[in-house]
Each structure stands twice: as structure tokens, then as C-alpha cells.
Length: 306
Image 1 (cartoon, rainbow, N blue to C red):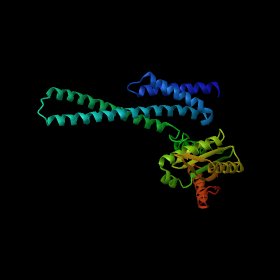
Image 2 (spheres, rainbow, N blue to C red):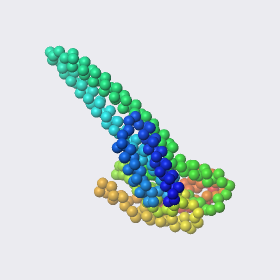
Image 3 (cartoon, one colour):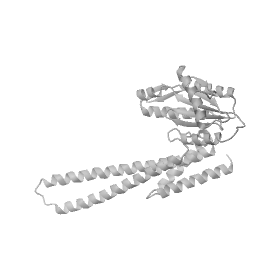
Image 4 (cartoon, rainbow, N blue to C red):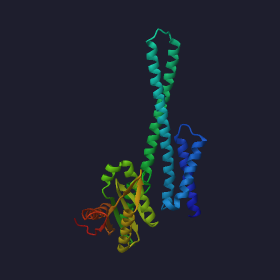
């Protein structure tokens, strides 16, 4: 990593920290320390878990999103406590009214407390709304999938647009669509949390297997797209077979259960005149063939006809 790369990362850290501070009504030293500790963790993981400086910088944006989500959780907890106190206050007054006790002063004091609590609850709700909107904006601007931390569908659309706008590529580019076999059954048996763990598990395997110049995207649901740059058709098939083998022979442990999964792959090559839709369509037809032939396999489609 060059000096300019490091300067770029530090600038991103500072930017996200300032945005985080401005976004919150109150902020303390501990929150700043937490952010910096998260940033240090991200720095340590760059060589393993990221494949570009852009990817690393986006990781700091995700760290900010996590802080915002934690803040929302804290405010929701406060909100809940206020509501519990309000209910207790009301039940106390109702019980007192059934007895011959003159408590106007206590009632007035309770009314003041109730008004104060109502005001605080409203403030907490307003802050929750603001933070939710900020997280939504961050997710819309981010190029990373929030769950798997690989590139998202929007990043794929942008990348394919930039590729297909060129009249001719000087090197071969291959696109793979990967689909997890029987994913619905896995969710039905083990639950959706296990399904999310599998998506993260596969994303990490893919990142570790591919070269720096290759890109992994979460296409949607249980599907991923891989772009292989500067590679021959033969090498593309070798990589695909290695991916199939690696995923089918690795096991995810979840709550004492060993979960084995397989994937199916559809592959194609970029051709002059392709647009994003035609490129994806060919790979998708190849994927359909892999599924129809029994899954856990790879097929290639190079024909533009249907």
C-alpha cells in the first residue's frame, strides 16, 4: 500500500468521524474512541478482506453505519423505559383514586413527571427517525452490500455500464452468476439467521479465492456475480471448478449443526456490442442449464440467440 493510499484512507476516516459527530445531537469522547477502534480493526483487515483501496474506504463508512445503528438501539431502549414508567405512573394514580386519600400535590408532581417523560420520548423518537434516514442515505450511497460486505447490485450495474460503453475491450472479460442450491430449504430447516451466515460464509470464500483484479458482487437474494478480468476461457473454467469444489467441501458450523452447501454457476464472455442486459441474460441461461442438469456444476453460454 502506497503513501497516497494511506493518506486517502486516513482522510476517509476523518470524514466519516466528522459526519458521525454532526449527525448526533450529543456526542462524547467514548463514542469517538469506539469509532477509532473500529477504524483500526478495519485497517488491520485490509490485506485480507478487501480487494481495493475503494473497498477499504467504504469499510469505514460501514463502521459509521454500525455506530448509528447502535445509537438507534440505545434510543429505543430509553424510549421503552420511559413508556414503562408512564404505565407505572398511570396504574399508581388509578389505584390511589380508589382510596380515601387526598393526594393533589402528588398528582401534580406525577403530572409534571409525565409531561417530562412524554417530551423525552418524543425527542428520542425524533432522533430515531433522523438516524434511520441517515442510515438509509448511507446505504443508498454505499457500493457495498450491508450483509456480505462484497460489492452490491448498484455497484455491479455501474461497473457493467462502464464496461459496455466501450467500443472494444483489449482483453477478455468473463462474467459468472452463482446461485446457492436449495437455499429456501436451508432457510426452512435452519432459519433465516443461518441463511445469512451462509451468504457471509460464501462471500468470504469467494473473496479469498479470487485475484485482486477480480470483483465479487451480491446480485440479489442467494445469487452472486463474479467479474473475471484479463483471463482466458480455459482459465475461467478452471476458476469456476475450483469455486465449486471449495464451496462444496467446506462446512459451516451453526448452533452445533454442520451445514454443507453447493452452488451452480452460469458463465459467459463479454462480446463486442454487449449491453449489461445481454451479458447477464447469457450467464443466466447458462445457470439455468446447470440447475437443470443436477446443480453443483458450471455451464457456459456464448450464443446471443434464445
